[in-house]
Structure formats: structure tokens, C-alpha cells
Length: 243
Image 1 (cartoon, rainbow, N blue to C red):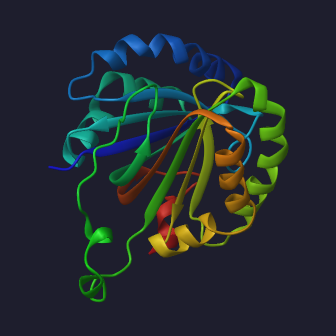
Image 2: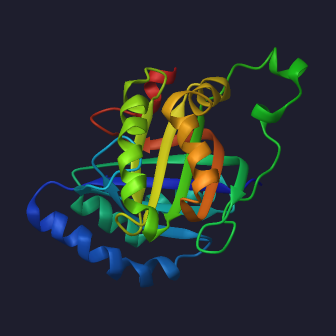
């Protein structure tokens, strides 16, 4: 049974629902810590851009979690009391289930994702008979305070490019602490198109700067196979465009 990662997004409309969601960034910790089968987890706010962004979006929040398998992940996300409470207050919710295929780095001093060989890592001959599978990319970084201004001057160019890329089925920035702890998450039709974006233009320049200028105190890069989803975002499943 492969580890499954769930990322649940919740959109809140009325002010009192947004206020509830903000309060739950602290209040939900106890409930999540007691949830059976839950491994690594993070409560996150989101940004207004396409990736790393300094401006918070007060209407959207996210819960990232790891589980022993997809069936357990679906059961807990669907039926546990804490996730039900979020859906009760939210105007729209969407959860995507992911299987880790590669990971490098740490998040809060640990490696949260467990990888196993998947179809996307099969030998080339096997891939010729297998259809390309949707892939997701996640980058998480703790930005060094001394580099903040330089970092945020560079990032808008990357965010605008990913927003204009027609291959991207879904993209969002989220994180635990605005400005300092940032996550960018995106879903692509296949590994090839995802890698093409990472190796070119502003994104490639930023990666070089990360290495040469030491932007991050801690960083993690992970890729996933997209397994399935529940719910809608902007009225439909973001995965529909990949079918």
C-alpha cells in the first residue's frame, strides 16, 4: 500500500466563515493531531497569485496530510469530523489525492513523503504502452529573512509565466506563515510538460539563484502521480481538462 498525500482546499464566502477559517488555523490543530491514520499534516493559508505570493487570500485555506493509502485517505477526508466542519463552513471544497514519486529536501526538519516506484517511473519500453499520467509538483521553502526583498522581486515573473502556461491544469500558492514559509503546487498533463517548464525561463533562473545566493534556509521539492480527487474548484474538477 503506497503512501497517499491529500491536499484539501476550502473556499469561504461570508465574512464570518472567513473569520472561522482564520481562527481554525490554530483551533484545528488538536483535532487533526488526534485523527487516526494521519501522518504528517499542515494547516495552510493561500496566496492571491499563481505560485509563491506575498499577498494572502483570506477566502481560501488548505490542509495537507499524509495517509497509509488512498482508501484510508478518502475515508478520513470524507467522514472525519474536522473535515466535515470545514465543508460545513466552506462554499466550495476540493481534495486531490497524490502518490509521491520523488522527493528531495525537508519540511519542518523531516521528510514527510514516502516514495515507491510508480507507472511514471517505469522503464521506457513499458511507458510506450502506458498513457501519460497527470503529475503534480510541490515546492516548499523557508525563505531567509535577509533575502526577502530580493526573493519577492524575482518571484512575480515566475508566477506570471506559470499562470500563462496552458499545460497547467491547476496552480496555487499556500503556506504556513506569510512571506517566510511558502509552498507552490501545480498539476500538469504529464512529467515531460512539467519538466519543460522547470528547465526554462524565469523558473530556471530562479533555481540557479537559489543555489548561488542561498535564498532558502530549508527547502523541499516533490513530485507526485495524481491518483484521484473529490469535489470541485470554480465549479468543476480541475482534473477534467486532463481527460
